[in-house]
Length: 428
Image 1: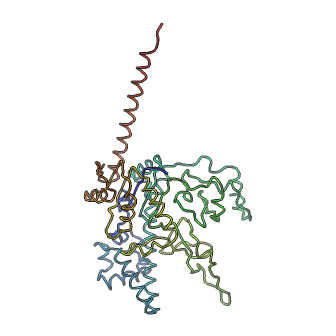
Image 2: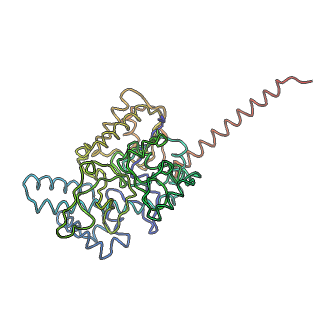
C-alpha cells in the first residue's frame, strides 16, 4: 500500500461541465442543478417526483420554481424524512411509513440518476483527465465521500485499453453466448478486462456478485468464483468509498414484473438478502437498476445529520478500517474539495485517531476556502508548511511543474556525473 493518500470530496468534481454548462451538484444546490436539465423539468419527472416536491413545499414552503433558483439543503431534507420515518414506525402508523418511504426512495433515486449522468462527462474535463493520470501514475490510496463514479471513470480512462482483453477463448465464449448457448464461464473470461483498471478489484472489498469488466452486454458472475482466480487480487491502492457508491447494490424485495394470478410469489433467499452487488447502475426515469428480476437499491450513506447511525453495515466497517490503516501509514496527504463539515464528525474522529502517533511529511490542500487548511493541519497535527491550491486545475498544473523540475534536476545531476566520469577516465 502506498504511503500517499488522496482524500476527495464533492468539490473535486467542480471542474466538470455537462452540455448545459452545469457542474455536478453539491449538497445545497442539488435541485437547482437537476432542474436546469431539461428532462428533470419534463411532465414525466414532475409527476414521478410529485411526492418529493409536495413534501418539500409542506415543510420548507418552497415550490419547484423556488428550488430551481434558490439553495436548498438536501442533507436537512434526508434528515427530516429519516427522523419522521422512525417516529412513524414507533407509532405503528403504516400509512405515514409508506408515504415517507416513498419520499426517501424517490430522493435517493433522483440523486443517483443525476450523479450517474455526470459520470459520463468526467473524461471530457481536461483537469479531471490530468488528475486521473496522476492517480493512475502514483497508485495512491484514494479515500472519497462521493457517491458518484467520476474518479473511477477518470482512473479507468488514464489506465488505457488492455491490449490482451480479448484473447481467442474470450472471443469464442462471447460468440457462444450470442448464440444463446448454455456455457460455463471459462477462467480466461473471468480474468478479462477491456481496461487495465478493473472495477471489481479496485474498491478494497470483495463483492458477492460482479460483472466481468469487459465492454458489451454484462456477464454476471458469482463473486466467490471471480475472486478465486489467483490473478483477480484486490489492488493494494484501493478507492475506498466511505459513504458507499451508486454502483454498489443490494437486492430489494420488489420484483420487476408482477406475479401472475395464482402463481406463488418468489422470495429473496437469505443469501440474496445479504449480497453486495457491483453493477453498472443505470437509472432511467427514476426507475432503479434490476438484476435477476429484482429491483436493486444503491448502498450509500445518504446525506444526513446522523450519518454515524448508518455506518453499521459490515461493508462500511471494512472500508473504514482500511481507511484507518491507510492513514496510519500515510506520510503524504492530498485533500481535494473536502472541508470536514461539523456534521461529519466520524471523519474527524478517523483523522484524529489515525494521526495520534505519527506525523505527515507532506500535506497538500486543494480548496477555495483558505480556512480549510487550518482544520486539516489541526486534525493531522501537521506543523510544517502546506502546499495550497485553489482548485484541481491549479493542483494538476503545480504537480506537472514539480515533476518537470525534478526531472530537470535529475538530468543535470546525471549529466554532471557523466562529465566527471569522462574527465577522470584514463587517456592514452
